[in-house]
Each structure stands twice: as C-alpha cells, then as structure tokens.
Image (cartoon, rainbow over all chains, first blue to last red):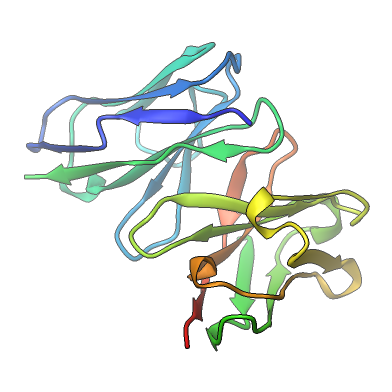
Length: 107
Length: 118
C-alpha cells in the first residue's frame, strides 16, 4: 500500500495568513491526490481532486499543487472558518489511503 | 443533492456483531462504487471497505478481513456493513461515502458511532 505523510501535523496561524500543508507519498502517484477538510464534529468534505482541481463551490483561496510524490495544499488568506483538519488521499493505486491529517487552528 | 444516511451503530461487547446500513438518495446508486470509511475517536480517516457498483468486486482493509462483509442492494439503494468478531479497536464513527470513478469520495453520510466495550 502507498503510505502518505503530512507536515506539519498541527499549525496555528492568524486570519489573513498564507498557510501551506505538505503531503508526501511513499512512491509516485502522478496527480492522483485529493484533499479533504473536516471541521470539528462534522463530515469530511472533498476540497480538491486530481492534485489541483478545485471542487465546485470551494473558495478560491484554496489551491493544490504537486505531482509524483510531493503535494501541497495552500490557503492563500486564512479565514476563521478554515479551522479544521485537512487530509490528503491518494487514489493512484488500490487501496486508496489517507494521510494522517493536519490540524489548522486560526488564532 | 446527494443524501447518505447511516444507521445501525451502537454499543456492543467485544466479540459481538453489528450490521450498519446506509440509505442513499438523489443519485443513481447502482452507477457508483461505495465505501465505508471509519474514524476512531480523535484519529484520522481509514478506508474500511469498498464495493463495486454491481457488488461483484470488494476490497477490505487488512485489519477487518474475515470479520467484516460489505454488501449492497441496488434495488433498495442501500449499502451494508456486517461486522462480526468486533474488537475494541473497531470503535469509531463509520461513514458511508460515494466514490467517484477516479476514486475520490465526493459525498459522505453523517456517520454512525460504533463502540466496542464490555
């Protein structure tokens, strides 16, 4: 199975800050990567798929990039409602696997 | 809007069984792979099982193989997870989720809590 790591595991930033989360795969997965947001007590929501395609309705301050083994999720201007856990998921090979998550706290 | 509603969770003793159900609506259920994904308290997401749109292909994470069975009834727009020989480490919220053709989970139910404890 392909393993995913995320860094950092936790970050705290202020409203308006630019934040970046990194996801690394144990082997190349082309662009078969998604990002999910899960707010406390809520259901995971798909934000980005195919590494950089923003799902309809997701604010444009979210952006994904990368291919192969290294990927990033960037929030260009952090908002209070972005306080959540963020998970990457690879779907290049079965089984799909999730990263361990990054918790984002908005000061 | 796609709607997924899980049921069947609860408190069960180690070694016991539970059957989770997920009722789907507002999309053509028989066109999609479906997933069960779980989240232990304070932990991340873990795919438990997937099933092909026609039910003829199934995948299980190693930790549940031989104990859990995923199934579906396309006539009833329903997904199931039969869980036997439950262990404390199976304690989690279990989410039903629709899988897109390329593997992403685009819609999720609200989840049902399974607690395995004596």
